[in-house]
Length: 449
Image 1 (cartoon, rainbow, N blue to C red):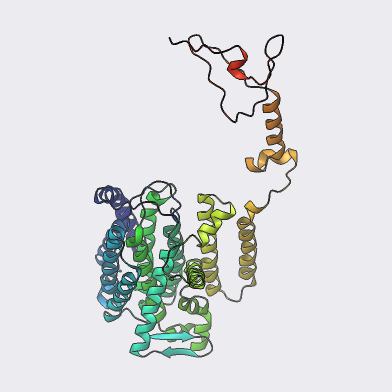
Image 2: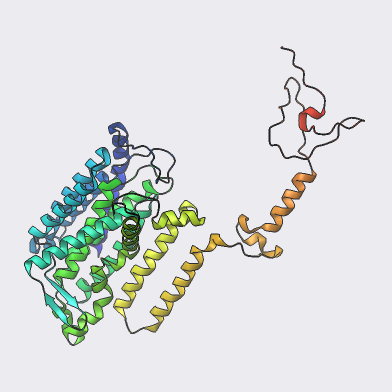
């Protein structure tokens, strides 16, 4: 665990320290596209944050290769090299897209090629655990097609959800944390060495996201761009493939009694990986809804719009930060709920806890839709938007009491502003109505000074 934590910290430190210089490079290189209709930010922001994340990935793999225990991952498996090859290719495509706006079909082809490169080097699904059936071996073509599909789905799911400051990096970090705990449990508790690469990938992915988040939180100073979103999506899918297709459930059967029992024990994490992943269920749902919505309108599935889940949260009335936190909440609930259920599927408390937290999440989602009646004594304990009595008293006081006007020698009072709704006052003995503020004293001199 110490070596995993050291790898995570090194990856986070390198990513964090390089993001500042990368931001300056992005500004000089002109990787600051104009604000589009679907964008939420108001000022042009540089992209290419994926450059820092890629070098953080390289630093994490380099450090792990020189550690005593993690060095065995590189000696016994070719999966880290396969990950680095696929990540380099997808990162290069993302950098070109951040700068020159590559066509969507070209990016899709690049994603499939990157997945194929990983398959050629051994990072592929060899067998698939099916509930009620057991362990099903896949042919070479079946494993290749399933691996490529899983990689492409995960990359685009993460890419589609990258629409608010800190959203994609935070959600992937939560998913990586849940996945790390699950993979580490398989590796350490059951002594299965085949789970070590997936555990390493999850630790490095957490470091990449944690190092980039301080620069990407609202208001973001830099965006990860497609070079970052596609990169972290590929790393996440690589860990899922390593655990799902490389770990043999027969090894778990030594501790659970039978192969079918072992598959049933791990089904909360195994099966949803095909849809593609429980740990990124929210981005996957956003991906499916976006494809259905655009296809229904007769548009291309890759045509950008403002119908994503985070856009809908903003339309409901949530602020930018609150929308991001709500997405974090649902990602953590699904990911860690599946993790807890995989540890002890017989516990009813886990199910009740997930249901209770889901109810809280629904209340948070609908919060801007209603304004509860708060008694006067409780107004001091709620946010200002719910303090109706205080707002009403303040409005009445503002109408009844005009703002005092200070006369400063040598400074002319300001002209009345169009649309000023302050109540008129009476000036002089006869009472001049319709004047207020400075004009109540007398006519303004128009002579030049």
